[in-house]
Length: 510
Image 1 (cartoon, rainbow, N blue to C red):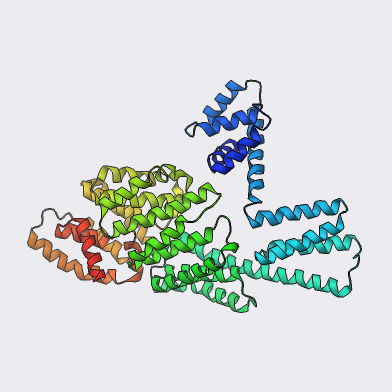
Image 2 (spheres, helix red, strand yellow):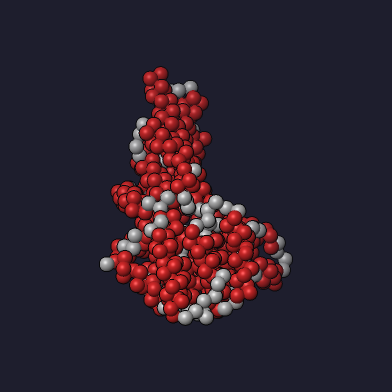
């Protein structure tokens, strides 16, 4: 990303309070400086291209260097945002105080310096920020060494050195645990959820290592508890044990609620936890419990505009999916309309995986409403983006849903090539599912010509297989994205997809 592209992203991500502080900084002299003019150009119109911005600036400032203005404005924005953060975030505040301590030492204000270092260490302990604690302890040791240890006994020095080693030990254990959780997430994101008991075994090395770290840690703090429950919850979801995952997420949520002063800013892990709860509730069809956790998301306040958009995306998805699962596509369309301006129009600001998820569910609603041209347009947005989405586990489901769409609009020539392509993909992976094979077999044989009796016979032939699949926790992970079994039933029995979904939920609820 070019420096100008980064600057544009930075300007458009500013919250109202950040915009106010930036404006005050840029225009405090009352003069229209180069960088102030550039800021106004970028801020005034989000539709401007890079060339538009450059040309407009050079027209207003023909004798100024555009690249210099870009670099200077970028640095000013970072300084303004950092200044704001030190009053909003303990992490920024503690590091800022460390810089103050170094300045005091350089100015020979040794008493004030050591008082501030002690204050920093006490605050770091309260916020369980062992990295800052270690840095403050190390600075204290180095400053004492530079002053030839004035008024410091050997026992006091040994105590300080013990504290430094203890904070290092805690940092090492926390990092080991976090790295292990990172490997688990990487495997799940890039290899997909577990599709068989054999694939479940591939995660056992991580589970054993995680248990070993937890049992050997020797101390129990918020970071260790949080990472342990995150690891446990994500593993349980990966292997399809959603009820146990839900209990683990509940426990994790309770830990967060008790330690709100320790949440990061923005509270990314807290958001992931609530999303995990919502996903687990969805799987066990407990839709009535979801509004409470959606309300918790609505209470999250962050200085990060992008993070607030992430929160909004989770609220949108879990407001929408109950309507998809129950076949209430008209109600789902109203949810999409409600979030269009505040979320969907800003979708490019989200991670690619989240964009994909949102577009996928929008396309499913359009398929359910039989608005096939809109569904195709939305799916094409997914299929035409960077090749990186081809590696995402959800891409296989997207291709199958695209085949559903082609079947609905009767484009059987294109269906044949898509089926061949998907079959090649399935042969190259060990993660093929029974529902995929049944779906591809069904889709390759048009049934429009069948009589009512022949349809019933065909349904009786497939019904038992589909029921077995619905009881399989691994198969259900694909059906959760799109209920291919319900769609097949709707085609065979000539009943609307919406009605089939609604009937299934009623059966599960009774």
